[in-house]
Amino acid sequence: MLDNISVGNQILLLRKRNGFTQEEMAEQLGISAQAISKWENGHALPETALLPLLAKLLNSTIDAILAPVIVKEGGIITFGKYQWRVLKTDGNSALIITESVIEQRAYHEEFTQITWEHCDLRKYLNKQFYDTFDPADRTRIMETRLTDCDNPWYGTAWGNPTVDKIFLLSTAEVLQYFGDSGDLRNNVRWNWKSMESEELVLSDGPHCIEMGQCINDQYNDARKAFYKKIYHAGWDEKWWWLRSPGIHLRPTTVVVGKQGAVFVCGSDVYSIDMGVRPAMWVSL
Image (cartoon, rainbow, N blue to C red; front, side):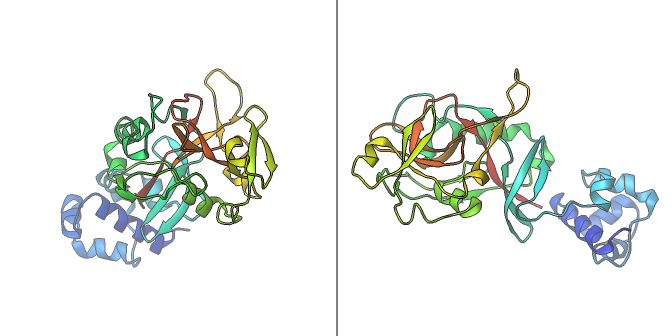
């Protein structure tokens, strides 16, 4: 059974997204503005004969109008050609991140100290990757003002605020949306001993900074991401980039490991083996 209220809300959102007033849309459909108002208020449903024209006018589909997807935090939605996890909803907008690693790409092509503001990956996400979405979807991607903080264990500076449509999560945002045990806040010293085995050891010694510090807690599984290789059957666990700065001794950026630990010491920015999980705020 159709839900008049849900259908009406969907028509309202699609109308506003496409820049129509009720009068303008009514004129295109050959009906009265009062009829549009009744739809949007949940007092009536569009006539069946009008649905194909309505879907075309709103750059949507009949199914999407009559059975809109309910967007809730923790749920999965389709946007463009990817599946996205909903991290947060705020009124008629949502923060989303790709459910899987979508590709492998360097954070920056040169081995030099770099911040999110100037890195190649930021340029790529906000130009080439952004351009892969169709015009209707691009209108839904919102500009977001991004800030960060200096690396709390190494003191590496994060740079300047930016305004982006598509971005990477920061260390703080990963903890906020995937689970925060307090390891970062309380300076719990999990240390990275071996990149190959991703061996993690709890230690309080001063050598921990030299070994590489990380957040290793009960939320590791939630932070794991998978990547489907072109010439490989199935999915592999994959490291993925964050936008926060890593250790100050060499050009690095924070990453999430294959097992879900957050390596605040970072990985070399020019590594082409790290995965990308774009994030963005979109209008619903």
